[in-house]
Image (cartoon, rainbow, N blue to C red; front, side):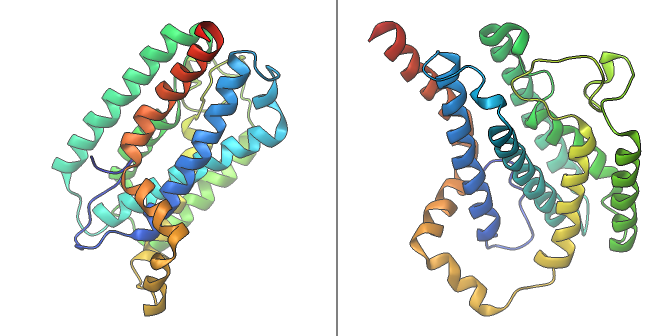
Length: 248
């Protein structure tokens, strides 16, 4: 099973630090989903995940995923776009996004995921495939422009709710995971820029010895298997808590 949103590169070695970041994000996501499930089943206060600290925690998790996805996209396609791989990736992300939307609609009703983290990474990847050929300087200018434009718009924006996938509108939504293209595309592009400045430029030899640290080994392992963990962790948590509440 390939890792969550991982891109293959021309190198034989995996980028262990990206796996570690993915692993960290996966662990944080499991913690957040556990808190969500506990509140959903009434075992803790129902508004727990809407408190500022938990909202910020969720934003950090999403940011790490999008940043790493952007780094991976540039490492894979920055030198030459691999269209066949992009097609396969879009198919996988599209199917997973549709599956998550369908399952959450059945379970959570009005709180279903219309445009969550996977939907956003799918859209960001499609957009990135059109601009990955930009030079590093032009990529920086584009990021600065998009960030300034987003701040100028100052969401929520007074446009129809059908544009919720693009940016937060004035219309209320109740989705358990909502990641509109703006501003999250900017985080994805920052990852692409970081790829060119950090990951493509090479790192000192001592850096590679860090992966021998035991705690990092655990994160790397989780990152290497993050797609599988991403898919199965919430059904497991949900089933265990369901059994505890209704069958215990």
